[in-house]
Length: 402
Image 1 (tube, rainbow, N blue to C red):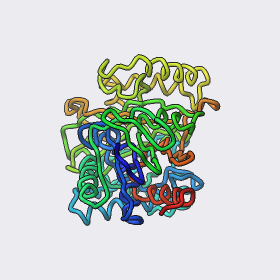
Image 2: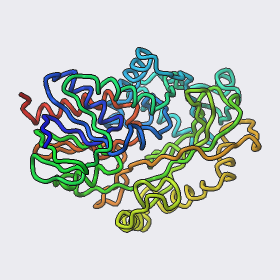
Image 3: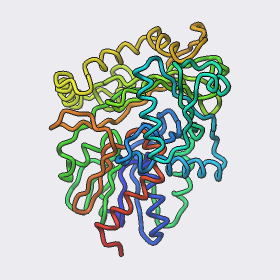
């Protein structure tokens, strides 16, 4: 049996950032991190857009608002200090009508309250920044929005941490169950721990329930698809629409990658099991029944017009629908230059079962000797270094470190 002071379940950006923060504060502690895959960044942490967000979408009282601005700064500094490629291209948010213009003003207000470097610009200023972007009267310009290759960041962080004394990152090591208050069982062995941190992403709710934590929540997976656009010169910056502030998704947008390529997306298509990346691959009947039941309840409760959103998102399996939507963001686009769908991702979105509502903010809950990160959705990648400080702070208050 292995013994450790701290056991972290999940090798994504959040788990690694917490490991990094713990090691900086308590280098004498032994820490084991479990990753069920044979390599890091196989799921959300390696399949997200790679956008480093600025922090103006989120209400000032939210955890997302508290961590995004600092998270952007820390992640940018980490990339620059370690020679990790970063495209500091900036972003514009465009509108189509008066209603969206009102939402744009609300975003500017939130950005100001959150301390974001953000400019409200007119059409003439937009033409100078991003000539091909199409807007109605006004737009927002975010100079601190960037892009990285998320898998490169995760792997760099993991490789550095694994070299440090007292740290052991175990790959192909899957959490199976909680044997008792101090021991868990994996696919390979039993591990005794003093404190456990659950950052398991797509499976965080399942693990938390074994510890008697987060019982009112269940995960609903949403598939994010991106479509390749084969002309790098379409835009020079990210071009985003004004989002619906009543739901957690930012809408279909045009993204500049770290290598200056262009992609269109993502979708937010409800799917029926946690790793439903392609067709029936990794089909899980038990998950299908659980998640389908939850989605059916959401469909009838119609939270944030879930029914309407679900139908709209399913249409995005068809390229022509994605092309039509993306065409509204720019003045000129060549439909012949759209390529194939790129590597999909799954958003591990939390549902409050009692309220039948998708949870907008991060959720962190604590057990007797455990902490569970239950809703580390976008912009969690951006927030990771800042968010991890908050999590370690909260653990230090609840656990006497020796």
